[in-house]
Length: 187
Image (tube, rainbow, N blue to C red; front, top):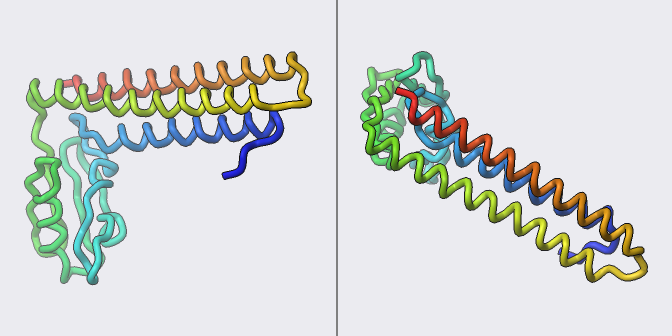
C-alpha cells in the first residue's frame, strides 16, 4: 500500500480501518454461543464436501426455528452424515441428530462456569478489536505528522477528527461487549 499523501486520504484510510476492525469484532462476537439459538453460531463449522472444506452455509440451509434449536438442511442429501459429523467435531459442544433430511441441533443450557468462560472470550475478542482501532488511529497520526505543505491547524483538526473516530469506535465495541455479556449471562 502506498502512503497517503493528503489529510482526507489519511482520514479515509483510518476510518475504513476502524470500521473494518469494528465489523470484524461484531462478526467474531456473533459466533460466540449465548443461551439463544442463532444461525451465526455455526459460521465457523466447515464441512468436507466435494473434495474440499466448505463453510456449512455453502452446503446447507441453516435456521433457528426455536430459542434452543438450530436446524441444518443439506441441499444434497448424500452429505447429511458428513455435515452431522462436522457439527459433532466442531468445538461448539453440540450433539446433532438427523432424520434423513434435516439435522436438529439442540442447544443445551449453558452452565455457570461455561458462561463465565464465554464472557472471558468476549472480552479477549473485544480487546483485539480495540487494539486494531487504536492501531488505525496511531498509524493515521504518524502519517499526519509526516505530511509536508499542510498547515498546523489542518493537521490538528484532522488529528482531533481521528481521536473522535477512535473514541466512537471504542464506544461501539464496549456497547457490543455489554450486550453480548448480558445475552450470555441471561438464564
